[in-house]
Length: 261
Image (cartoon, rainbow, N blue to C red; front, side, top):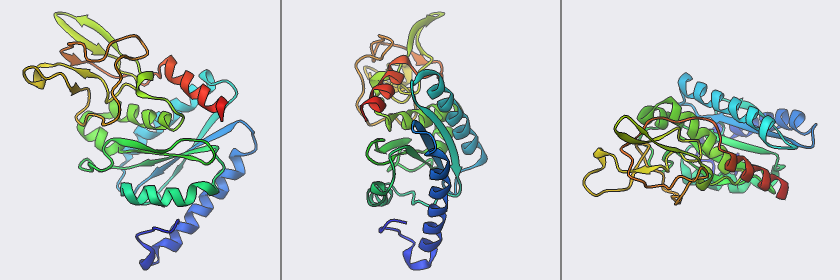
């Protein structure tokens, strides 16, 4: 494990390094046979439940199928690494990744899955590094998303964070704005829009226009409009659901990023 391992004094560090080397050896042995092959390595931390694993597996499969159908010249395979050999603390993980990334080949994204509904440091997730000269890395607090907002949001946020590693942005999301009965609603928030849809439901309070479609609003840049042309912040009463279908603009951003690297 890279230099800042908090378990170095206990002997755990050696076992973690050995496990990581074994994982990387297996990954490079298969992924690099194809010049255009990419790998998503899903690291499950110890606290992740079977439901967390299931949400991540569904999301990883969806991403793999999306690459096959929507990204020319690239294929994405995925593998699980459980338990994770990396720390979960945000600052420690970032330091460890900075020490390790130069030794990687740039053909993989490492997705670190957490289950901590009270972890304000990691929130629902964040990107550590884009795919490029070295492998990309990103975090998804899948357990928190499931706990606060359910499995659909959890799956979307896994996809959301992985696509961030390929340079997709929140503006690449899509959301429908429509009437249902007497209500004006946002519907079918796509992965890059999830946690960044802003609306004015009755629970927001008088005059407040910053409510989000999730319990923990994202802290990143909020787009003025989404790729579907919907202005973000229209006075919708609620958000009725999420879809794991990635918007066209997000796939276009992924393609442009890969072709430019």
